[in-house]
Length: 92
Image 1 (cartoon, rainbow, N blue to C red):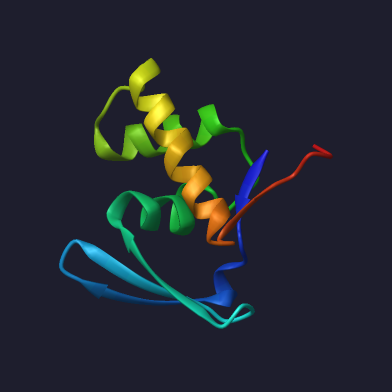
Image 2 (cartoon, helix red, strand yellow; image 1 turned 135 degrees about the vertical axis):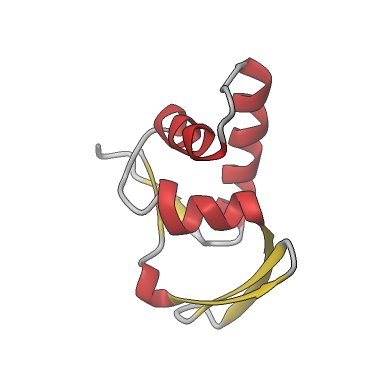
């Protein structure tokens, strides 16, 4: 299961199609795209699997999740994990 950090720990600013997100706990600020922002704000607010988050985001954007999209989505979540903005819960 994957989940984003707590919403109260993030400060947001939008610049065109990009977002700047400041993680209060780490003190780090990151530039993220609209897909990453949607994951952090919506799809990963509650713990869910990669497939569930991808499906939620696809429905919101009117898209279909195929194998290529799921692989790209896994890459995005991996980048968010490297930034410390999402975590994987191995106990669920």
